[in-house]
Image (cartoon, rainbow, N blue to C red; front, side, top):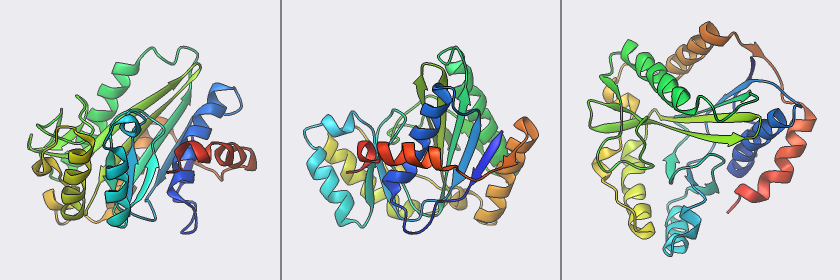
Amino acid sequence: MELYHGALGADTSQSFEVALAHALVRRASDGDAGSALRVYRPTTPTVAFGRRDTLRPGFPEALALVRDAGFTPVVRAPGGRAVAYTPDSLVVDHIAAEADSLAGMEERFDGYARMWSGLLAEHGVDARVGAVPGEYCPGAHSVNARGQVKLVGTAQRILRRAWLFSAVAVFDGDEVLRPLLTEVYRALGLDFDGDSVGSIRAEAPEIDLDSFEAGLLDVYEDRFGLTRASLDESALTVARELDDDHRL
């Protein structure tokens, strides 16, 4: 599986980073590319809204809150509700070409949640699979600590012959994300409890992000085999065409 490792650069917009995941899964669905893994740290604090969020009456207020807080708003490629992350986070996009892309969706949710919880457990985190009360972008396959705070959220996008499985791991910055998400979810009129926001560093202070990221890549290497690759111009071209769909 090809590995695209790292953000595209400090001058690259977060909407383009999100559009790239969309481009990779679209190319896989069209038969122009195969399986790929993209792992990067956002270059700016970001709030990624779900499409449904943009239809809420309170969305303009939520958008203003995000910008006033110095975060970049985007529309995410997979489904779900608003998520927030800082450069002290990992975004992991796994793309695969598969004839029956809908089959196995629940198995993917379950399998990757267990993979994340296993990795966290290796670092001493009391990691569990399942939603915690009042969490952002709630899902049965979130990965939490102690049954109390969310650490990793997952979502999927399914096309005809390919799927995108996306995960966001909040490594640090929970003290910044908590008040912002509280206000964003209030504006959107959605249930939320700020106490549900956690971070990996808060659970295991001895971990550094470089080591944790390396461990994640080792897990994928053992499971799939990884070949480091550079994004070709055709993928970047499709991403440019999709950028407007994700920019706010």
